[in-house]
Amino acid sequence: MQRRSVIRSLATSGAAAGGLVAASSFPKPAIAQQTYEWRMVTTWPKNFPGLGTGAELLAQMIGQMSDGRLQITVYGGGEIVPPFESMDAVESGTVEMGHGAPYYWKGKVNASQFLAAIPFGMNAQEMNAWYQYGGGQELADKVYAEMGAKFFPSGNTGVQMGGWFNKEMNSMADYDGLKMRIPGLGGEVVKAAGGNVVNLPGGEIPPALQSGAIDATEWVGPYNDLAFGLYKSARYYYYPGWHEPGTVLENFINLDAWNSLTPDLQAIVEQANRSVNQVVLSEFTARNNDSLNKLVNEHNVELRAFPDEVLAGLGGLAGEVMNDLASTDPLSREVMDSMLQFRQTATAWSEVSEEAFSHARGLDYQYATPTQG
Ligand code: CA
Image (cartoon, rainbow, N blue to C red):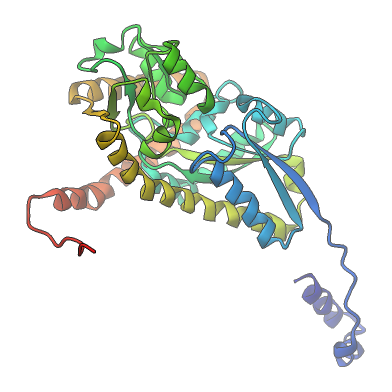
């Protein structure tokens, strides 16, 4: 591309005629191909299924697509900095890149929580649609500029599970005094319901649940929760993940480092993220069902649906929590308003598409079955 543009600029200059005739013997311009060696910190345990592996895939793709001009080494949470200091490391330029989930940065910029997931909000495809066609990318860049970073969606978990509990959750009163690990706006909702909420990076969840430091936790869904062995320390596995209906994972890049890249490398980073964004969602979709079977049939986990009364109670609190946040923080309001507006139209469409289809698929009728081998 750079070579073509050199020839094109010659063609428009006074030396054009001679230059074009001699084109076949025109010496290849010596273009200095700068190589970048970057480091990526993550909030995930190294190579953790779907999350850490998504970060690895991103680094690998960027390396291949750039023919090695942008090489990225990935570090698990705690290898360079603790998981929740990943944004500090990127903001300060200690490393160039990070991979995590936007709600981990609520202590720095409140509005980042909305960018990950809003309780009772939008599913994975609706979030992707908002980012690409609803102004989400531009708003996210505005939010991340406050942290000196460029933002890309970089994976999606799909609808998560409600979490692991050692008692049945029959009414809103069951949240009273419950010590639960739950991040983001969902955590604010559980707090409003009377819960005692903590946020822990993934790697710290299993020991906290086992020791009784927390009574309950959510993490992601069957695929990831099985990998952590959370079934060993809690009896009931609740659904659905009302708090994270399609959580967006993120790639954040130090703004100076981002601006130092050539436009073609920037395009590679953008497209690699788009690809990883879809691959990770597909991985979760493919693996969750098998993992759920294992949890229920091999580990005797008891599946429970949240009663409608509890869901409706949490939904009402979610509205209050978000309005409160927006009333004290203009950037949160701007992001929330954009998302709520998009959610309205997405919901109307979903009622006659995804929801109507799910209903049709679930009806009781004889259907074709796969041939047994
Ligand atoms: Ca979660």
